[in-house]
Image (cartoon, rainbow, N blue to C red; front, side, top):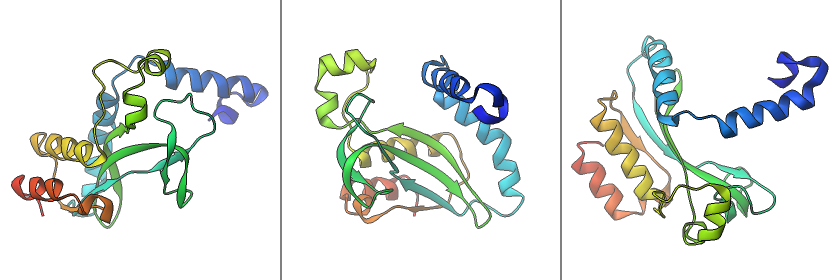
Length: 174
């Protein structure tokens, strides 16, 4: 984006875009809702929603100052290493998928380190939640919001969580 929007000053534009995204005062939920309203009809023209996909992508990071960075499993690397992890919920059919919920996972070591949280600007209301607990919140939100339903797909790490599986059944999802 930086090279396209300011080819003569790409490095400076890249920094400006990072600042805009990182410091922007907007609601992630509202942005995702706007994207969903624009994109979902196009996806559904190719068929009904068939799946709700729970995932936890990892983003490799150096250092320890980015919020949530810890030594944890990173799927992108296929091993444990320094990374951030997010819990996501996407809806999909055979044509496309669309992320509808996204939350950065805050490991316990971050959740309990007040000076580190304060320095990074982590709001007080953000507390530790396991990845399955975050996924369940996202599923409950999607059900309450009337999103078109599909079969819930998740990897074995989530499938091993009995409370999550039971709650999925209680929500009327497969």
